[in-house]
Length: 305
Image 1 (cartoon, rainbow, N blue to C red):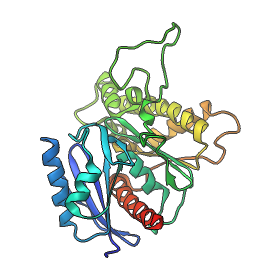
Image 2: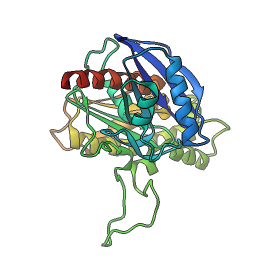
Image 3: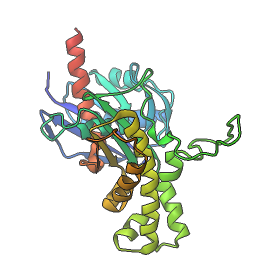
């Protein structure tokens, strides 16, 4: 049996596939995602994994709420996988163990380990700031999934809400008003950019070029993010809070106000060892984490026998 494992990161626009052998991750192969329907997307995944060669297990990261024990997709964003038993379907087609988890959760696992596969953060919280806001939690070097596998939807933490009248009622779809995703996502950054009449490119690009309106938008977004980070620190007291996703390319223009604001909201004496930093693996975090997921879970399966 090959010692290789395969990692697959499924996104709304592209699929990334890479092979992990020992501690070496191959250069990912990228292809556009077939979002026409679930059947076509599953067929595309089977073909892409097959092209990666022989392996002992596969890990698949998806932008979805996943029942990890069964590998069934409960709900999905941007890809047509809802209510598909993805672990079983892929496993039957490929003939090897398949493990499926949320994409931000897999990215968090990648960030907890270094290039040599050594644990560098026993307790880690990750926030991915892209079109929406995702989250992942690692405790004692292992993914934390909660009772049903759906934990770490940190983008839906409420960081601002009007609770002056009871009962507290809303008729809104997700993301809810006052949630981290509604206030600190890339979509919200775009909206802030329009308010500041930014030039015809992204707010991050404009801020890096020194545009005052873009800098103001990123500062506000970072401070909102900081409130969400403070909630995570007060809850988990982690070694690391890692910020990933496309908006994290703003670097310190986002992280500096986030750190400053988080410090204002963290309870005195909590988070004294916590560092807030940008993700190391960037767009490769999902596929690296998916491969690590396959390696870790395959080893656990062997140990259970």
